Length: 212
Image 1 (tube, rainbow, N blue to C red):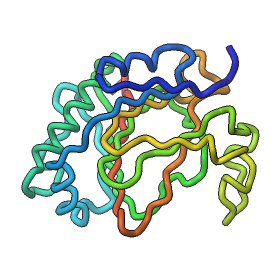
Image 2: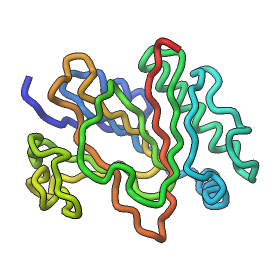
Image 3: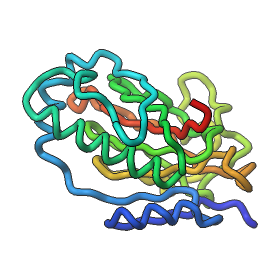
């Protein structure tokens, strides 16, 4: 099968199953912004530190006590529970490695492919994850950039026309190189530049755990 970054997208949660199609490398389901989550993170972002990492049961989600006790906290707790349950059902796992990343700068600023199976990402605050279409990429030069020189100049990006971005609040499933039959493939992606007026960025990452 030829290498290629095929996008599947939709507006209904059932569209997420398309990530299992062999040619699909990224699946994005758009969702409307949740004003309650926006309000909570506007108030709570400065109290979240660098975020948190927990292993959670897919039937329980993240305990509310893990987050600052401010108005509208339950909206974020509920959305995390929804995403954890959806992801656990899709991957058939009972536990999930959950990361809530809170950052004032790009965490992974260079285009790369994750050595994972299928990962879920959701950005609630700040710009969403960027990904690169294969037709505009040179995989041989991934992560070989020179310090201080961006991907657009150091080689892996053949044209910026191929750079796409996941919208905020959307659910994104990214297929990595360790997914069965996906060696040498996987969606090429990076953390976006973060304007100071949009900081901090708040991002949820979920990875399946089968041997907890």
